[in-house]
Length: 328
Image 1: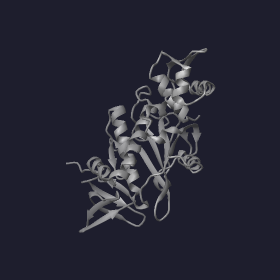
Image 2: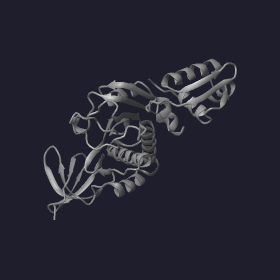
Image 3: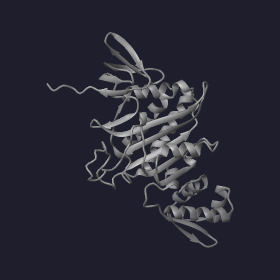
Image 4: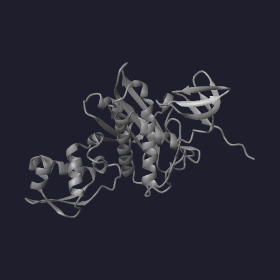
């Protein structure tokens, strides 16, 4: 299932006046489509689960939105029109990885961005190819493919932007405020709620494209005994995944777009304020060593600054373990 600009714009127009007859001539004019094309687009929305009545030779009435919370055009319509990433949203029942599918589709186009969502991933992965469990219907698993205008050395800022985007969306949609562990893990009660992976195709001067994958545990994963980490809710009716997805996409777009305007100053200021790693005793795990110390700050390119053993070190890519406070 896939949204496109016409289905999203039609969804916005009809949803603005639910239960009201909107003339076909008006919709045709607003969308720049023939009456026949409007009729076909209405049919596409109906296939997504929208309840739309057609009144012959008059127009259409939006009676209701889909009960399924990941309908692509519904998600796109929730995102402001100035965000170009929402014009193509693909929904799959099952994928090996949203990340690989988004890169494959995105690199065949020259658009500004697109989104790939899956109900489940069979080979979901995080940093260093760690497996990310993605059980069907229990989470929000999607990747955003886009073309940022930043130099390759600042790719880490995309990860910081994604962490802030998810945290802000979870707060606005669910009333929860997860902790951010550098660079982009979100935790609730010390358990992992969300994993983020950004991958880029770049040369020495520019990033050609970037794909950011987000795996968010939304609902409890059942009684199979597997520990999936933290979840947003035990109640499946308490969180609308489409609304949450739209908020994350919009937040991420605003953050990435801002990098081109102020060089990352506002992003870094917000991240430094919200990152729970800063000030904590940590162990930094690289492929070659374990470096213990105190997280002192975040550098201009998103690197972690750690003081330990009489020296100050910076880390661009590493795993961080927060020290557990000792009981008194």
